[in-house]
Length: 234
Image 1 (cartoon, rainbow, N blue to C red):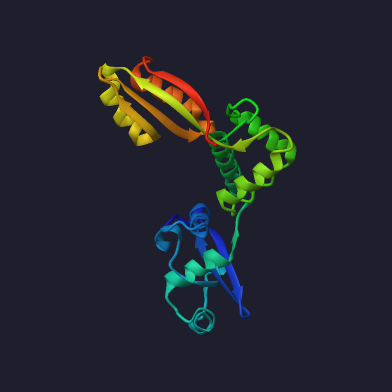
Image 2: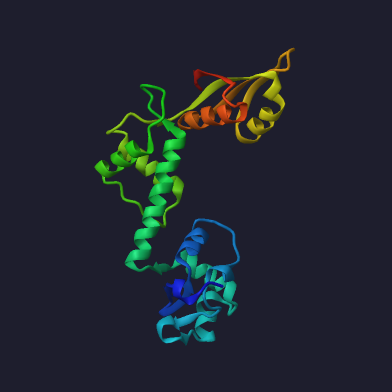
């Protein structure tokens, strides 16, 4: 369970009855968006209240009428998934800020400028969001927020989701170690081991992750790898 000072009220009203539980707003949000976790890890008390502020518990008759059970876990899950989560202004502001940064990071990693074939830096994406007055609902899924954001900023900056192919060559003395790391992190379309022990591969990746790949290859080869952008995946 969570400390009481981190909890906010989640409330569901149905059939003329009111039910409340005390939840962590971040964990409750994760449950609402499909994250599987133990409900008890997200609440401050294992009680269903009629009025949490006054500590008044809901009657068993009311629970049976609405939920057909008096068990805490299924009732609490339903309240979190279908009810309203009441946040303080600061809690809501922080949730919006966190989700906004997730949207910016996702777009920066997966999208590019189709005119140049290069990714947009996060600061440019954020500026376009500000200009378009993108509204971030902290209880909407990341996928939905990314779709809405892309629709809003496309009239302002050239941007779309694309994949690119990059050719990589690793010298013989670093190929075996570097290959293991590359294989874990990147999608390899084609590969070939050369007679001298060097490795050549064609990697496929989101357009916005080119700089990350280049830095990764330079790191694992100590700057001795060769990298060439082949173009966009069609």
